[in-house]
Image (cartoon, rainbow, N blue to C red; front, side, top):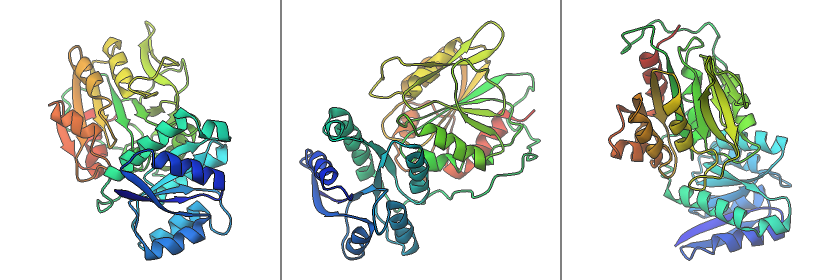
Length: 354
């Protein structure tokens, strides 16, 4: 039986969250707290398998609680329940940087809170959190942007500077923080664009892109429908949209679609990888980082039947959840299995710079 602590200043929301958690007979809500201070007092005395944490609360906010836990080296797995606002997006990113493992969008009204969408989303992130080993090393966050003049002059494994290629990266649980250990290490003159699918709901990918852009020498942005794909730019699939690469006869462009979710995912990495079958890039460098499930495996398998691919997957010891990269490795698709801290080096050595 897994024991939970639910932290929310709304009695109604606490009841809804508790009911959802306990709909799984393997889960039990041991305690609840009305604010961060009550939760902090409990966490000093007791241990829980997972904490479900609200952000905006009186006395001590969720962010202040995470700061206190980090300061006092109290290790606990935290899932954030965040409202869908601009400020909520920024606060959620801060929570992930402070050690929260994942988040779910908290509905703004009781009817939505009692709905199937919130029920399923909360259980998904909880299931992932239960699997996580908090003793694994947590990737360090780079606190300041690298100079735009940063450049790499070695091509590593590349033998021809005339090859054109694209990087397609996929991640899920643990991804937002892990990306901060990859993208800021890439040089501004990287000789390829990057398409990126990070499983996130609507309203949060713009904040993620802005934060990563602040830290990185490469340009990082939320992808826009119809825009041209350029080297040295990272295009993040917006939450709630599938990202597709299209060739219009002269240039490659981003296409965003509202097609139905695949395997309950939108964006879906498999759809991104499959779209690259028809692109004019000579080679696709596929990168798969931490995440629950196996999204990306079918797409890369299909892509490899028609395109030259090179696959870099994260290793188990540095993955928050060794699901997506494990599926890639077990399928025999990985050319390199590397720790998180060397993913950027592997990308740069293989792709080169311009």
